[in-house]
Amino acid sequence: MNTDSRLRELDLKSSSLYLSHQDTDLGYSFQQHLEASTLAPEVKETISSRCLDFLKEVLAQYQMRLPASLEMLHKLELFCPTTVVSATNRPAVKDLPTEFFSCANDTLDCQWRNIASAGFAAGEVDPLPGLGRVAANNSAREAIRIREAFTSYFSAEGTVPWQDNV
Image 1 (tube, rainbow, N blue to C red):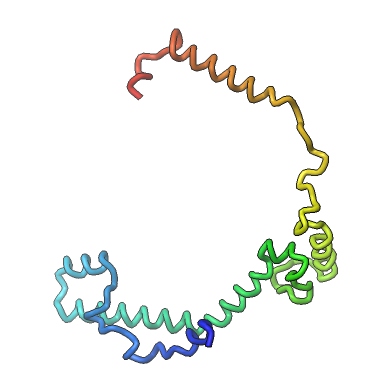
Image 2: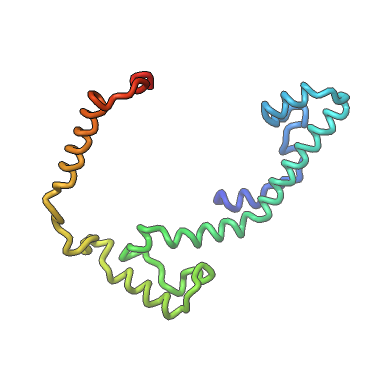
């Protein structure tokens, strides 16, 4: 039995699954505020009990929504970059969740084929085709020269009285 089905089959309404509200740790901050309050002990017990009941209900609601959440996550897995560019594991357009797209199916089909034919997976595509060495990289040398000029100026005649205090 896989984890997904085990989570869905758990009986979250069963009281044997949970600690008592006295034994449940609802967090340090909660405990500090509760202890510092001037509320009567029975009111503090009621607050702790209701907080635990709230958490139980949150778990039950999450469990109820789990199948839809898992289905959505499985659909999103189809867009993993390694899957999209894979020559063998790539899903067909008909298997894609069309609710994620705002274009017509024929446009989607065309774009999906373009990705497949681009050759990303095989490393056939140069990401910046025709772009070799663009310049002699003199701009970096010029930036260093300007920085050094500013450094010498602000370390000598351009000093201000407070700069050594910073």
